[in-house]
Image 1 (spheres, rainbow, N blue to C red):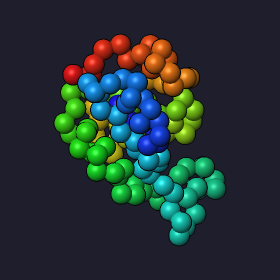
Image 2: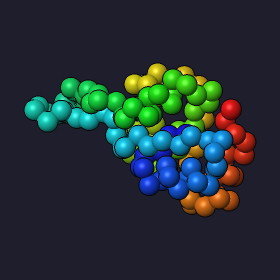
Image 3: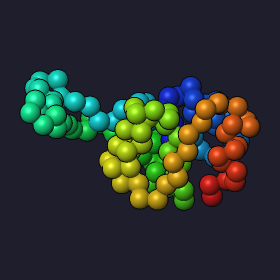
Image 4: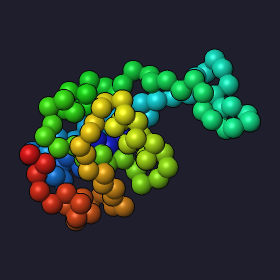
Length: 117
């Protein structure tokens, strides 16, 4: 499972148990350039968007080794963008998108009923 922050990864991992591996993307993995205009004024199209160094090593390794991937970024526009970028830049083809409104055992297990293995 990939979440946005290390704090969430630790909490969710403790609730799911040792059968699960939960890692943090550390937020966005794609950023707008700082040296040029990033939006075309006439069309509002993004230009010059590039990937910064992808996540951190544990996330990349996990994706390469996993039988199943759960993208559990926040249920807002920013979280959706992070999930989309993770799929694109880490070449994740098979995944399950899950969101949590509460980080409690009940809230987490409602979406993750079985081990991903």
